Image 1 (cartoon, one colour):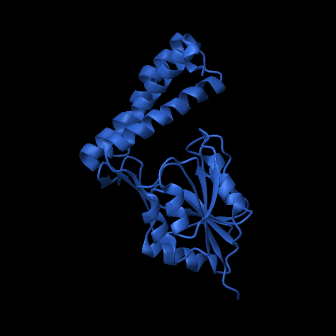
Image 2 (tube, one colour):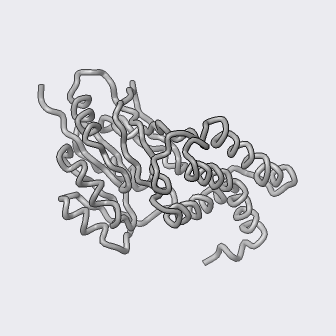
Image 3 (cartoon, rainbow, N blue to C red):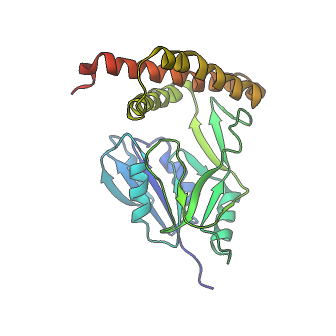
Length: 262
């Protein structure tokens, strides 16, 4: 049986701090590397080229999955492994990927367990592990809807599960997390308008009190986020805080529309 080929695809924007480690981990299993870069202002593109990646330069849309789809569409191998620049394929996961894509199983995609770094620790509770993500699929069988930042790929046909972890070096310190938090709440504020949410007493109480309290109790108590100690508390608190912050940003856009014009 002919050995199956693998394309590793990424969308990037100012990822010079992360990209080399990501690509170093997969260079032994990738038959090609495709990087769609969203107008980076740092050394991201040069780093990608150092790993012989095929680089496509484009703009940097708010829904980053648009560029991920461009990378997926540009792939040429039998299978596609879609990664973020701050993710590391462990040695055991690399071996498992090669094994499954060369098997005769009639499966078109695989969920991969992901271990998330937060403030120096890998979270094990709070609903954060195993953080399954659908990243490995046959070319032409998997694609992202590109409508929401936390969506999963849609795969045609059967999907399976891998056992070994994808390491997500997401938030090494709070400053990195806060940059992402601000960007994410900006996107959520825009989505509130797109979903037809109205400024009202009900929505105010829902987004300022009910949703954040419910989420905090769910993450920190029900899913035992307290077991992760201080990082677990900070994660639960700020993931709950996204509701009132995004609502406030949404309110400002409604109240002061001229602030959003350029």
